[in-house]
Image (tube, rainbow, N blue to C red; front, side, top):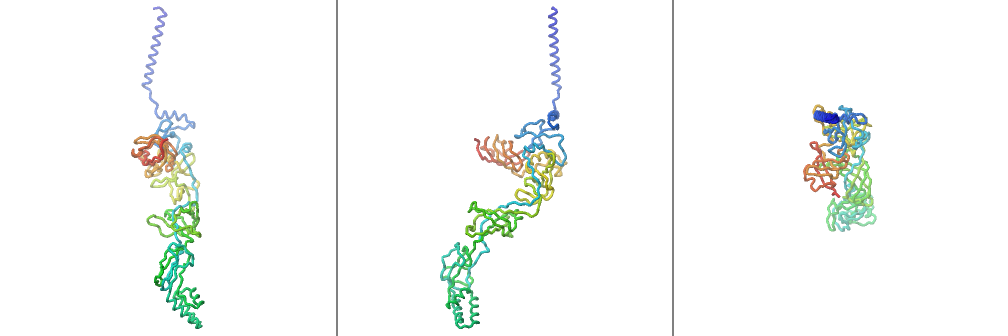
Length: 505
């Protein structure tokens, strides 16, 4: 073998040797390499954050107990994961939420203000006759009905309108004696005879007529003492009448009453003189104004309502008894109190809490003592100060963060236990309702793109829900519009009510 061939063989052997060594080293490194832990990945990602903060893990605010080692989109619903940083405070006084995250999820604050609880109280009622304008026509002595005028119950009569002519024999004899004394000219006896006629029930006008004409008038015309509606007419031609017998009942209709049933929980601030706005179904678009004239002292035992009376003029007679009325009362309490939106209060069953907004995106649960609630405002008797800010919506986000740290559990006096307090806004007793569009559906689960859920402070999002039973989704397919009601049970959101409001195009 010449020198050239020998060199070629040597080079080939050396190259093969290096390849073998490289493969062996690679195999050894691969077999002995330790994979990066979640902490290593977290440190790598944390080092790349713009503000230098260290992210411990990422989580979905809706499922805060599930941790992820890198950012991205939540596998549970259509939203980005939220970072949990190492330098965030971990004391029991509060929790910290990134301002940008809070803004994206619709967190809304409200000021604690001092003022009077003022809100309209709406109630239904009806038009009634004015019971203070009732006249009863009775006979003053025994007699007979000679004539009945063309009247009937329900007729409207004016004051002085004739109702019936009565023959009173007893009056005829007394009038004859009075005329005899009148001709005799004895003033004392004549005055005594005049008083006797009055004691028999004879009207003064009839006595004057007998005296001026010098003739007896045994027939007297019974007239309406007031103008109004004839409620009762119990007189017929030829009837014999006894003294004190009721012949007619007349009810005036100007003004009329409107009596409304107000729930006793809202009746505390109603006072006589409160302004009232009234609308009637009979006259759409016509709005009447009045004032509360009476608050009746009795509460209805069945409906738990208090009757409130309003008096309205009725010159043209257009307001008729029995008409349905919708009233709105403006009430105002003279006492000044600290007020917050009713939706800001978290009721746990044992206590009432609000989430107080502090500096730097921090939020602190505060126990409060509540007073009266009117409309969308509620009075706070203790626990807050004027000018502070509280969370009015979006509490579910802060509640999730608080659950991670056990803040609410410690506030409830259970810091030693491993469990944390469930979010108060997701109470199992409350059924939350919303509208949405079906993205996918199976026998056990349905994914919906739903709108805001006001009862939980949720903004619009896409997320899966469990079905309480498969029959709920019968006939529902992707693209359909639905209205649904759900609760949180065993960590899942379970739909208990589902109705289709629109079909897929």
